Amino acid sequence: MADAKVIPFGDEPRTRRARPKSKDAGSSASASAAAAAKGARGKRPPGRKGGPLAPVPEQPAGPGDAVVAGAVETVVAPEESKADPGGGGGWDRRIAGGLAFLRRRLTGDYEVDEFGYDEELTDKVLMSMIRPLYEKYFRVEVKGIENIPSEGGVLIVANHSGTLPLDGLMLQAAVHDNHPAGRNLRLLAADLVFMLPVVNELARKAGHTLACAEDAEELLRRGEVVGVMPEGFKGIGKPFGERYKLQRFGRGGFVSTALRAGAPIVPCSIVGAEEIYPMIGNARTLARVLGIPYFPITPTFPWLGPLGAVPLPTKWTIQFGEPIPTEGYPAEAAEDPMLMFNLTDQVREQIQHTLYKLLVQRRSVFF
Image (cartoon, rainbow, N blue to C red; front, side):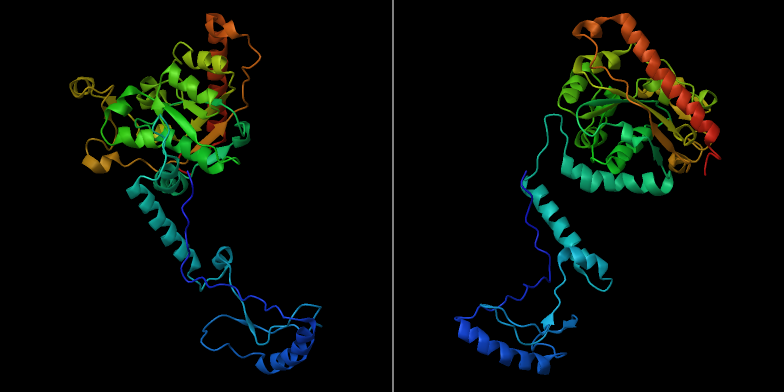
């Protein structure tokens, strides 16, 4: 998609140097220009306001050159205006960029892939909405980001917790904002996510897709970073007393997908999400009536109403482990149940061990 041409407000063209018609004209002009420069030094050109003045250097004119008489006004380039605290170039560019973004939205001049991923909307809007929660509220610390390859397909496997799936959003922000290559995480989400109004559209726009082997393998073959949380609802809806104890990782479907695509598996451990909504009970009857996997009861919800849905400001740590390669296995390895079991167990044990290590190093839940 071609970038829109953004014209910053207030920019003026740089002064061009005059070209003499002949060598004689250039020689005679240099003497008079030097004298004029002395008198004009420190004076502002008529009709112009603001901006520092720079004197014309007194250098001998070369053949074919002419010295421009008068003071030369310094012109600040758009990228340099950030250093000028008194200038408004930065805000001008932001406003112009915002208007250009709105124009593209209104005219439909933007692209989405067949999964619904809208890269521009994700970068400019969705990540901007998540970032305050990521940086200021949970103060997420990221470790081992270099373990995610800079190119090619890669499968990130992480633990899942927190009653509400905020850990998936924080994981996406961690990859998006910290990876040197600026990669974006494409999460595999449960069916329930795509059954909810508004949430369905936002999830698609952010690059998430249904947790099925076909979609995951297609994304990996295209060289995308794919994220999966194999614990599913068993992990996110477990009681507070079982925090940081990994649930079953299913039947190893994510390992089979990685083997077929030849993509490395990067284990990921997330500490801090377990305490945002301490789940002390589960109203199963109400959950069945509402058609949801569980109905959480926490110290604040549902007792405080909507206020009880505000997460606790815990301190988070996300650590990416060393990748487990899969390209060395033969094509039929994806059908070997023993190999899938062993690799699944290896990934799970690595995540669990890292969780225990991070918990020992943690000073406090909130600091």
